[in-house]
Image (tube, rainbow, N blue to C red):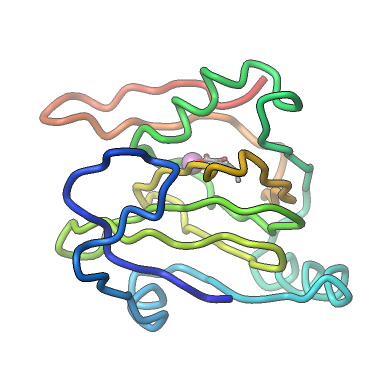
Length: 171
Ligand code: KMT
Ligand code: NI
């Protein structure tokens, strides 16, 4: 667990690892520096681990999402929205139950870092952090989403030189 790397400048296929050449890995302390929590909670400690995270961070609501073409309603639009750089007024807190995916965030110099999300990973992107998300070629990620209060699905896009606009992520 716990793998992150700097991304190649050009993305040919968002679902691939998109390494630089040669690959340049990103230390987990770098993620901590930008406020990201990236912690492994093995399946058998899931309940206690998530309870602890909820108590620490003040989360009191949760749901479960399966990202997969067959399972996720409105799949194409959601996949597109997830991969447009955006931020939320709330934390994005996800515990990966099964499957894999990538969360991309920027470092302080605006360089993209790709964070591997796999079973047992708790990833918390604090509110206001620009990010994007994609599944990989397996097209399957099952995650618990943790919230403070009932979630508002507002995402603010970061557009090249443009105004922030918002899209709805969920129904
Ligand atoms: C978001 O807002 O980017 C997401 O919810 C990503 C999908 S949850 C694994
Ligand atoms: Ni998001």
